[in-house]
Length: 105
Image (cartoon, rainbow, N blue to C red; front, side, top):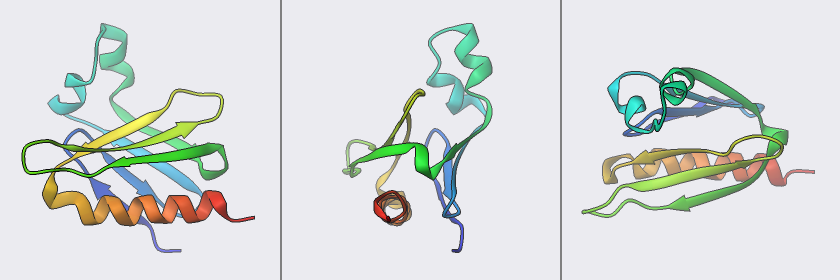
């Protein structure tokens, strides 16, 4: 499977068929942080095996609001990335690929 990458407003998500990787760098990732510990942990990459993802939620972006893709992770904190209207297609492709992978026998 070809790696699918979608860059959002507060991070990037990529999926290679086995791992879902979130990359957060720069000042936008700090906006998601509520504590000093969050500032440290929200930087860098987080890799999640596809078999640990139990659900995908998707709210499309609208002209006046960002969209959100969220991933429910078994035994760990959930992840989400926000995106703008110009990024919808990339995030729909990401959603479809992850849903196909987690629903496969």
